[in-house]
Structure formats: structure tokens, C-alpha cells
Length: 153
Image (cartoon, rainbow, N blue to C red):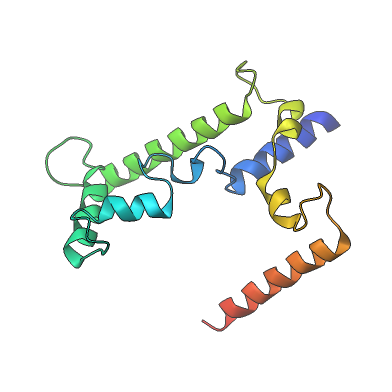
């Protein structure tokens, strides 16, 4: 594989595997509600600003029953797996379509480079368009702190 294709393959793989489903609400694709506030409002069916046990169970029951692919009122393991795969394929297709800006059925290195990277924006604390050594050091420190907290669980 030549270098540009390897670079493109590595970049696309990192984006897909890294879960970079951000931007047009990709993190929750397959669900009508993307933001935490929208999901909360959807679960709060009586609009009282609280989610009761019944509301919580109803939401999760409804989500599970979306996997009842043959509409028999029961969800088998096979149906659950098939429904999960369909959602995964739909998210991957939506993400690919987001990357394929010229809609030619292929993603080029130029299309990837032209796409804003939300990870960069997060690291660029002073929003000057470049990453300083201090910004990278701060990001590494934050990651270590997070890892240390995980070890305590």
C-alpha cells in the first residue's frame, strides 16, 4: 500500500474506531434525542422535572422492544443482536456520509484534512488555532488524573 493510502486508511480507521461520532449529533444516531437535556425530557413523560422509576423502566422497556424485529411481543437474543448490528451499520453509514463531503462514495485524505477535529478544539484551551506544549501537558495531566481515579474504583 502506498503512503497516501496508508495515511488515509489510518486516519479513517482512527476516526471510526475512536468513536468520533460528533458533529451532527452522531453520538446518539438511531435515537431521536441527542443531548442530555433532550433525553431527560423524553424520559420525563409527565413533565414534572423528575424521572420516576416507572418513567425510567418505560423508556428502557420501549428501547428494548425496538429490537422485536418480528413484532411478536418478545425479543430473542438473535433479534437483539440483529437490531444492534443494524444500528451500528446505520451509524457507520451516517458517519461515512458525513466524511464524504463530495458524495462520490469515497473518502479522500483531502476530505479528512478539511474536516474540523473536535479533539483538537478541546486541546486548544486558548483557542488560538495551535497547540502549545503547555496545552498538551495539561491534556496529558488530565488523562493521568482520570486513569488514577479509575484505579481507585
